[in-house]
Picture 1 (tube, one colour):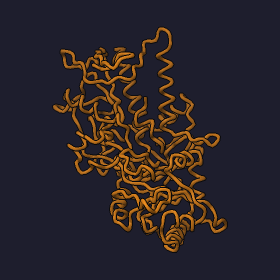
Picture 2: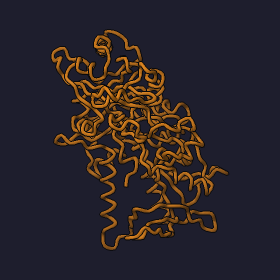
Picture 3: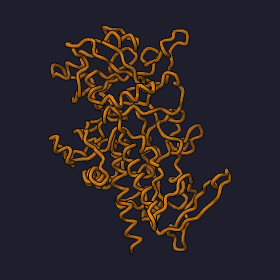
Picture 4: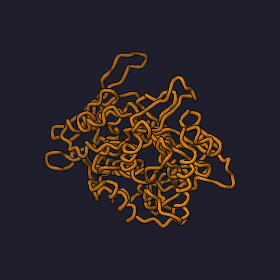
Length: 466
């Protein structure tokens, strides 16, 4: 259970939360709305955005108080004007990825509910929904699903009647080598790696369209700038996401010449565009030399940059999560600036000047060449020249599909023909479209799942009770 939400690592957004108040972060609902609308490039539904953000503090509180999730670390990520992305700190040096913690906690709760004597709740896993049941009046009245017979490879078909169906089937960023929806709506992105699991194939979108649901923004696909390139498996089409919180903690991006090329805390689409422009040629593309081997040469991707954290940035991010990336061979550590220059094979003088310029802008001595105004940590420590640096290679990867079924602020799926709700059909999460517009802000995916998932549950309960 959990889908791509279980892989989310940057956090969940909330404006004017109790944690922000305790940390004296003077955020506002208005600022959060403004950031989200601006990120969406004019395509976001203001009604959906305002609903999500007005309920964001309550969503974070619900997770913290109802399920005791310690969303106590707050970061300012790309496109945000204030620190508002909440995540869970390491515990005893061990990472606690926020998406996994939320998904596993809620999944355990559901499993417990299903196991109670006399419970009306059933949890069916290892099954695939293939179509809706439709009543004579056009209302969605249940669904048909397939599952393997226990102990057998034979597939059985089942029908399940229900007063309401809530779709939470995710997007279509994991279609793999034969991407039907991606090829139809964004053919220029076919062939890019993806951070999605193979389960994200757009089934819910296709099923909804088949019963007359409106689709919106299907061509709006978020390409995340930082999917890790693994040295011993560089061509794997599935990339492990380099969490945006790495940059939120102070990580910077360098091209193959050891130079910065972008405001690391700009929106994802802007960072991706800058990477394509500045990190795609033979000389500017970040490259791996596998395990230092010279006979195998450098591993290349179509665009790639070095993600670099200073010791201070690494301390801020947390060594539990950073250690996890290191164990997976995604991040590497070296001692001192000369060690970093050698590891990423750039000129030491160029690298030193890059970091000096960055720190000068942080100290307000100069303006940053790329318009950056938030500098979480310094990149140089003159008092400890031997401090560690942490680095990895990252490449743009398909991450999120902003398009999906059109829905309203009550989570009701809307018809293509007249824009009215399809009776009995609700949706929440990445299966929906119209909320994020052309670009989703980091931390808004988990937020939309909680806000509109709760909305869907509340509406469904009211429908059944009526």
